[in-house]
Image 1 (cartoon, one colour):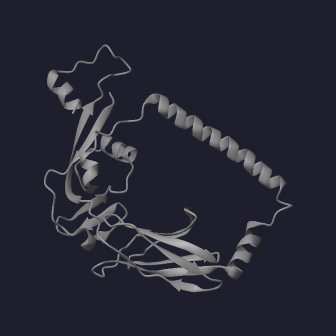
Image 2 (cartoon, one colour; image 1 turned 90 degrees about the horizontal axis):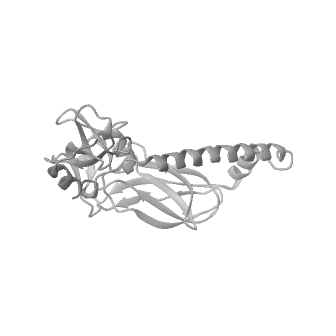
Image 3 (cartoon, one colour; image 1 turned 60 degrees about the vertical axis):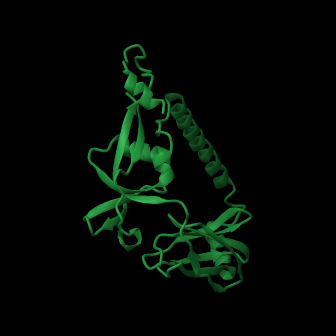
Length: 243
């Protein structure tokens, strides 16, 4: 039977996320010696898949709106089939494109030649990302955009530093994002063979985030499409699912 999932943190903790040590899943809390999984940038389908198969409790970080949105629902079968067909069509199209590129390889410069030319004229942007307290933010996303299109990007390291190379000369918008902070955008000019320093300061977002042991409510879908006439729900279940 398919289930819907709604997340909760009944008792949020007061530990400082920025003081925790980063790891692959989120950060490690020294106070309780647990990994705190960062769900703030996860898509709804990723959250649903994670908690639908979870066997034990987990400590995590959630945005306020993630806990107050309607229950996350699984993709229906028709949509899944459509997505599979879309991927299959993309693979076929990509194969045709590769064949066309192979036939044109004698007419166009190689990637190595293009990169070599770009290196001779490209510039570089580097710097650090901090918050208003001067604390460096690790794994922040920094991109340079032109006309709303991302041209290049990088993540800050454990010390909050980033470096973006091979940027063609021109005027750009540099954008930095980090969970819990308001995204920042500033104009920047990149010149030929020039290294441009851009130190970026982020301000805490008004969006509330919570840390703590996550509880989740799994409720059955109203209709079991495999055998719609066999599912029985009591009054309390129906009232809960209609909220």
